[in-house]
Image (cartoon, rainbow, N blue to C red; front, side, top):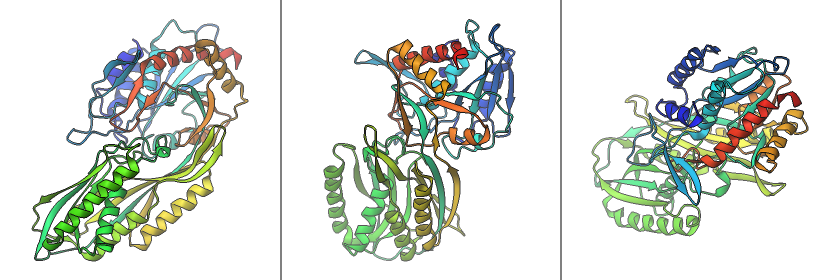
Length: 484
């Protein structure tokens, strides 16, 4: 079975982070049908083992690392994907695959499918193969973090979770994800007030690590800033009814929406402010987010609203949290991101007794101390306004020794198969490698993959021409394992 057909099967399986049961079931059946040894842990991580081919028994095992979960996002008006129908199309003499108004899950479903296809290929000459399939990589990496120390035996790991075809990832940023729960107080709706729906939409979004350097707009931040300006600079005494935005911790939010109430006499002033905001968005984001806009429509509301303090405290807290790149550094090819932060999700818990906001922040840096300083600053802002802050991910940066024979051989195979050597890079997103290096002493990890554009967004697409080349490269690395 080829990897595209396997990927299409995986696309029919719902697999958001923390809900990998069905895809783990699929992996176990895949192993059983081929009489392969496998192991599944309580976090739905699965390893499938295939014995070495004759003559390869004395070579070190190779681990093929992929994660099973995906970031599930959808355009406004469409359902977040439970299953995905891949669409293959041609553009500029290249073959691509995408989904329809949802994320595709090529990150990391294509790599996972390749690993399974290699297990299914009985013509491949190989050492012992261990296909390691982890859970929750797109969220808190709890799958990799909780692997048993004997879950894999191999120490040469080929990770098929890269998105830049002409690069080999040999390092990654650390990541610190926090959830702030901010309680709110509600009061009766004032007399003489009207309700409005205010929405920010049309952003390109994207991966909050890979795409953070593109200075795209954060819809949550934009909407909070607009409403705070109305209060502080326009003296409009508005109250929040609700505020929500974003779909994933690790995605730049493309939309945010609020229901507000404000005095009838201030409606025209607020409309002018919305118009000015749209002009400002056009001026600032015309190159990066040409469709980004804010809209305001009359609504209906007759129930309770957040009181003045809760409204102001929430908006001020969001406004005070830094988003985007907070520090640049010098890299081999010019400027590179050192430290960044993203507000990914704001949602409301509509408890009658304890209504509250839950706000996610995702801080990244290739400097562990700088990451923790920024995370601590963010935590202090939330704590000062009465929020309870919880850390859900704390991953260290990772850096590989590029002189290691396994890494060198991987780059040489690129040259032999496709005619160029990949550029070794350190990426501004966290990889499970940081956990594996700590957990499995002596391990070496090379991360490669096809060209994937727009991961973690509804614009996600994978270049199948580069995918085929990665397939060929991966097979050649395995077959040449005696050289490392």
